[in-house]
Image 1: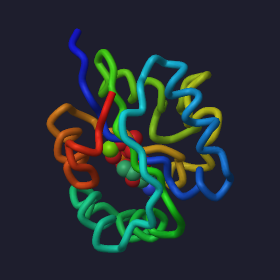
Image 2: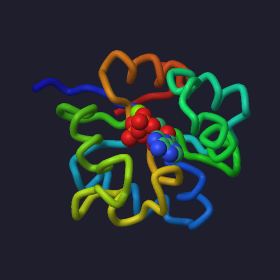
Image 3: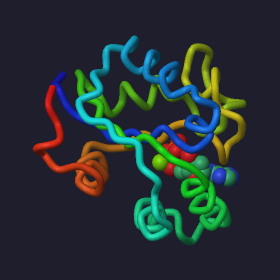
Image 4: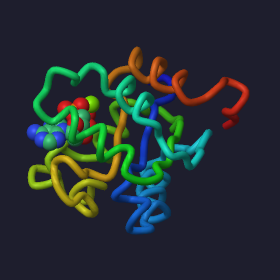
Length: 140
Ligand code: DAT
Ligand code: MG
C-alpha cells in the first residue's frame, strides 16, 4: 500500500449544522491526515464543473443548487490507500444504506444532502485536488 491523497468536501449540510469538527474527528480517527483545508463558497460555475460527470443525471440541477447553497470545506486527505479508505469512512451515497460508524450513517440527511464528497479513483483525486489547491498549499 502506498501513501496517497484524496479530495474531500464537507458539504453545505455539514457547515449549516456546524458539524465540520465532528466529521473531521471521524476522518482523523480513521488515520487520514488533513494536509490541506479551506472553507469556501462554491460558485455555480465551480459546482457545475466539479460535477460535470453527472450533468445528464436527473438530479444534476438540484446537486449544483445544493452545493452552492452555503459554504463548503474543501480538503485534501493523505494516508495509506486514502482514496479507498475515505470511501469506506464516508459510507454509501444513500445514508439509508450506509454502514454503522460511517460519516453518512451518522450525519447524512438524505441521498442528496449527504454531508461529504470523496474522490472515487486516484486519477479523479488528482484532477479534483488540482481544481481547488496548488501543490504549495499542501503540507503533511
Ligand atoms: P458519491 O458522492 O457517493 O460518489 P455519486 O458520485 O454517485 O455519489 O453522486 C454524486 C452526488 O450526487 C451524491 O453525493 C449526491 C448526489 N446524488 C447521487 N445520486 C442521487 C440521487 N439519486 N438523488 C439525488 N441526489 C443524488
Ligand atoms: Mg462520486
